[in-house]
Image (tube, rainbow, N blue to C red; front, side):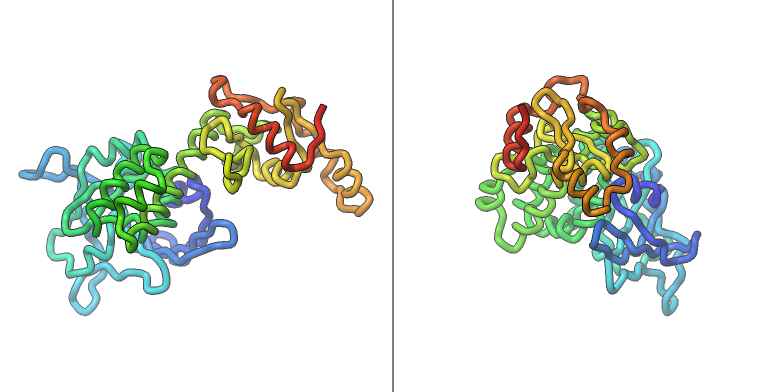
Length: 329
């Protein structure tokens, strides 16, 4: 389940350890960036007798002893994930391994509350403050990349009450916290953690909404195969850009790159246009192999979401076409 979730959350991996070895070691890859990851993972089970009814736990057993002591050994040149998997809610629990570096004892267990699992199923990620500056998280598989890439910043929020309050709000709705909230309420040492968490969750929330609106299909050709991006129509770097679904479009990797490079676009009536001048230059340069197939695969108009509120904003479509030099009648 972990490896499938890695791929489903827009990451790729190379398994460094042999199959079946626990903890497993991976090289996690996203674009040009990568990091080494050690993964401890067990099933998440109910808390047991004389424990709160809403408690779930992992029981870290089966680990080899080091010097007659069983303990977690963090990855020195990378990250270490301490996870539980819950089949009832289809979410991961994620604990801060740095809070559990002592000897594990005869019957170890690490817990979080069921409400966190429920909230993660709804919102993608949820946090549970365990006390002693420790935060545990529940994470939906499609949000696993958000957690793994930002785990240090996320867990660091446990050392600040104000950061924790804002983190809970961000997990519920990333758009509910703005820069002024962070500036006014969080001390400087923890601002980076909150800003990083908010950006990651806003990006993941945008992607999930856009891909769902387009039924996980490319709006220009219909491709699926988990090769899709949630592309901003007006790029995120523009001051007028938003994270509204109406500023997004689901595109396969090929058509996302073609759209960003102005090889293709669409107008306010959703008609698709090819860049004849760019195509001519590709042909003259002898790098037009695949161009005919590219043309054939394009729909006449983009496929739009059923809900009108989710469809591309005509205002943003017109603005980005002007910015990219398109002259459409």
